[in-house]
Image 1 (tube, rainbow, N blue to C red):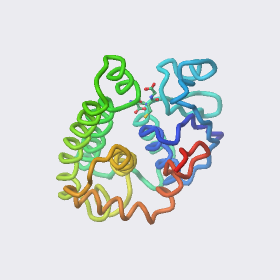
Image 2: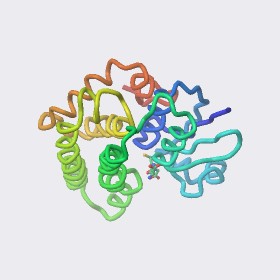
Image 3: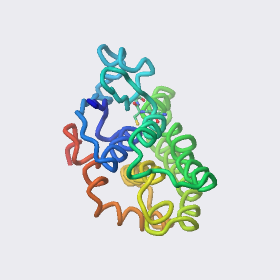
Image 4: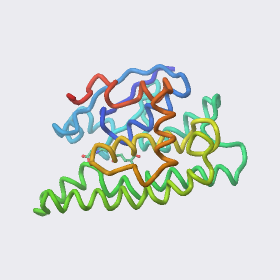
Length: 213
Ligand SMILES: N[C@@H](CCC(=O)N[C@@H](CS)C(=O)NCC(=O)O)C(=O)O
């Protein structure tokens, strides 16, 4: 199977998929899409994903979009190691944790939203307040669930779907100056991931289009 991931180093959603691919031990070609340079709005990427968002995963010439759909497809087709628990109730808990980030935080803070706020002349200070508010609210809700269900990782004692979503959001929180101090359970997962090869290799700093430090 030939895998080609359309990604951007700092993309929260692409970062999720990079972690999942690494946890599965799947090799892939990395195609950088320059979001800051608006490459997502131009050919040839527009033809890859009409929604003009990364990630997109090309699998032998067919393309999947939407990070959670990609990760669940990977988990169904490459079951080892599993990213979701065996029990249906536990799976719903994990998917709920993932949705706090994917459905509730990220749509409010991603590039096109920030650009729209800027176009409406929302000040930098107010943009920062906006980001801090929604990231903080989400992490508070998620932190409580990690404290309840995590035993080293976001859910249980193995990395899974919730961690694929949480670690990119931790990077995003740090990037936007949101303190993780109030979220000890989340900090614990961050410390563990910092030692794990799949998470290290997926980190924005390790990508071919890594931002300058
Ligand atoms: N729900 C989508 C979100 C994808 C998304 O928002 N990607 C961002 C990067 S994290 C993007 O490509 N933004 C480009 C833009 O806003 O113009 C997913 O989970 O894949």
